[in-house]
Structures are given as structure tokens and as C-alpha cells.
Image (cartoon, rainbow, N blue to C red; front, side):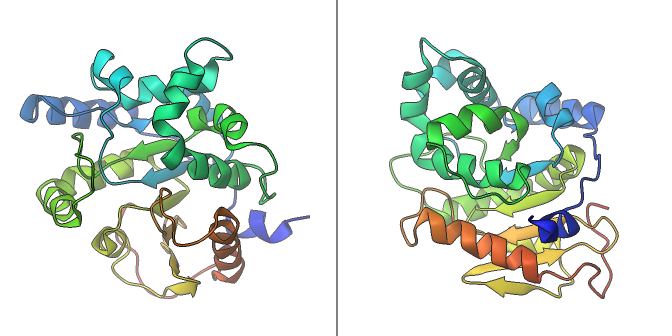
Length: 249
């Protein structure tokens, strides 16, 4: 049952570099007073998860809860994941269009490739505290995303972002930022494979899996097809690619 999944995504026992994460967060805060904090949503749950999952998105939504909590996106998602009553519906209303699909895919990755069968809100409460999320642009955006603006912020902060990703130390990275350069910078020497419109690669030394995917708030394909492309890509991805990997090792 889903033997391929455990072969492609072995349970590595990776752990984040907490000191480095604190240093990066402090640096961002000193140099950009308006940033919103991102990264590992709940440290204990993330460290205990059998698979370390990182989503790279684009920029923050301006959610009232995030403003009230010092601009920390992790507070909202952690509160949602751990709360069964009260303000859960209010928080979910602000996040469901993006985090509904993230919850479905993350739940499947954490459960051996099983297709998600529960409502997204239920899945979100089971998995959001077990993953990490980062944004190239650590500020809130407007009503519409400007890809050129995201690209500019990525260029200005790419070194720190790569350090943040390395310190989180994930098994699998899903680049949903819309910036293909993020994927290339993390894995400059491919081979890569394709499943649908998604691109897959594995770093040789670290064995970390990289996937270039649509943003989860996309409307191009169904959620079911989104997961099928990921599943098929992981089935096809070689165990030990040829070439050198000198990134995030």
C-alpha cells in the first residue's frame, strides 16, 4: 500500500536549526520593521512530524488576526489547528482559499500518499501545525498579486530566504511562489522530471525533493488533478539522480 511513496520520500528524521532560524528572524525584524513572521507554524508538532514539509508561497494576506498578533501568520494557523471552537470559523474564512489545498496535499504527504477524503477544514486542523510556510515577500499585498513585485522582493532577499529554508531543513519543498527562479536557485543542476505542469527534482546529497507547483489558490486545475500530478511525479522521480548538488545540503 503506497510502497512507492515511502521509497521516494523516506522518513529522514530531519530537524530544524533553531538557533539559525532565530538569527534570521531577528535580522529580518531589525532591517524591515513591517515584516510578518513565517516559517515553522508549531515547532513541537513540526519536529514530531514523520515528513518535514515546506510550502513557499508569495506574500501575506492582510488578515485582521495577523495584525492583532504582531503580524505573525503562525499564530493564526496554530490557533486554528489547535482550537475546536470559538474563532476557528473566523480564522478559516480568511485563509481557506489558499490553505484548503495546502491542507489536502500536506495531509496526503503525511499519510503515505492516501487521497484526502475529509473536508479541507478538518484536514487543516490535523496538519497545519505540522508544516512550515515561507513567503519571498514578508509584507502584506494588495487585492491582486503583482508577479514582478514578488520577483523583486525575492531578488532582494534571496540569500536570507535560502538560509531560512536551509534552517527549516525540510524533506520536501513545494514552490508555489510563481517564481521559477526559486526552484532553479534551490536546485541549479537538474535532472528534472515533469508531471502535468509541475516540475520535480531531488538534491543528490541531501535527497531533498523539490516540486514546482501552481499556487494553491489557483483555478487552472481541480484539487484532485493537482494531487494526481504530485503523486505521479513522485512515482517517476529517480531515487538517486546524477549530477552534483551543492545547495541546502
